[in-house]
Length: 508
Image (cartoon, rainbow, N blue to C red; front, side):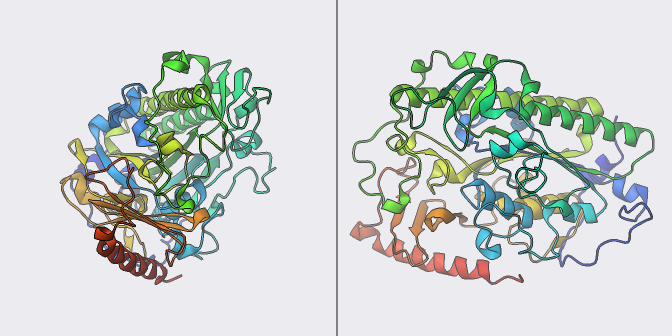
């Protein structure tokens, strides 16, 4: 069935930057006051986020081994962004940033904490929608939540926050966690990291472990997350169809795969067996010689003691985890279609940051190189034509963009940009550079069209990297110490100082 909001969505609400302002008047039930038609007419929002997902692991971004048909289908109907960047290259600061609307160095959230109390009473992305009359729901990991620990604990409180990790309770009308066995899952498991003699059992923590698990999708966290999302979509559709709840829905669905451990039902591993058939990125002799020490990633083939066999199995485990996650995305999108809500629902798919799979012999996240800082981003808005957009974007842009698309005010204080014009014109541009940080190594990235500039330390005392992304997209040759590029380096040092000052000149 089509909802009346479809017509209004195709002729977008006028949304202007504003202060947060006073919260709407509330009725006796505690819901935002206003006519039922006024809220029901607004589009729903389905925000889906994967954990530790590099865009190059998706077939819609060009991978020919890792098949992701459900995410591909969404991309074929929406706008796929090819140069979207996270603002923090690991989970905590990235998620706190795009949910709060501030860069990590504006709030000081450089680790695994909530943006509260740094942002005070200012509304987070979800809370802004809640204050405007939306029913906001979180399923699993949206703000930071430890994986695998927080997923094992579920809601039993062993993380000292009710199993909710660094969640922000004010953001949600309701919330659900999705516990799973993680590395303890029954099946064929192997610890790949720090296990050169093969004697170490399967272990937990942020460790490269592969488990070809027994049982079906519902044994694991992401299967439970998808099932809960399906249930809530169906409930919301029934309520609207029966003339019940008139609130539009903001549903945030957090999948934890492909974050380690690489655990999924056995069937998802089958396309990648035997592992020795899987290719690895090129290994370039002397690759690290022009990278400053601070730029060498915290996980490497060397310090993880992973030989070629283990490296290939890590890639296979990662791809199997991606395939499992993609299947869960498919279930949620199928439920949206069945419900009749699809024609009045904006869908966003992304990840909190990227991931190295052996490039430069680096693994996991944290680095400022392209594999770690770049994220997949797909936005589907009913009535908009499919497109591919190569303009520079940031995850920080999601808050103002989705608020604008839904006809909500866009607070002036937000540090992101409204990229909604790109959904009509993929050649539209709102920024000349994307900015990201790696707080644990005091690293900062400015990514322009041609250049990727990285500096370590606010005074660059720990080193600099400069890459010509037109000539060297794999970032093999650091130009920072070459005399002919010194003027470019000096220009970027000035730009970085100006960017950091602008970030900190906020109203917090």
